[in-house]
Image 1 (tube, one colour):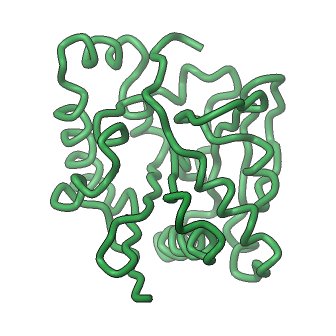
Image 2 (cartoon, rainbow, N blue to C red):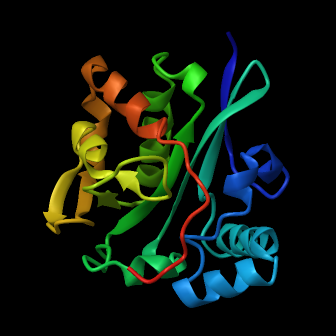
Image 3 (cartoon, rainbow, N blue to C red):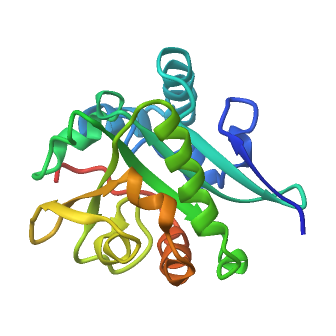
Length: 205
């Protein structure tokens, strides 16, 4: 089984699931996001966001291919490029961290170590760029697929709570700890990345 992790670009954006290509939950603030959806422009806004981040900051995602089939992706960026993060009660993301926005892994490809490889690839990319940590907002009441990842799954793969909240705690993963990850986190990572997104409800938190 051949597998590749390729940087996300405008050329391979179409390899993301349709619901994710048309999702601007993180990329726009709540008001702008609602306006984009009403105007039927979320995919255009998504492309514009990726283009801007690539130009100004660099790689902001990875797409996973198994035998040329796209089976997953992860998206991340500095908090300055993630306006939705300011709507969370536990914001802001640490100034020395990059935000893990969202991630997904096709259910049929979970349990094969791909989740661990995805996150470690992101960690190595960010470490080379001098980033010290990854932070994410978790959903402590996660009940099903959504753009916000479940808090308990983030905790299971090594994130620690840095600002608690009954619904949206902010969690942090120190990148130096990812180098020595053991296989006992593999299942938890697959569960985390298997949290399939659905169309977001764009409302103020």
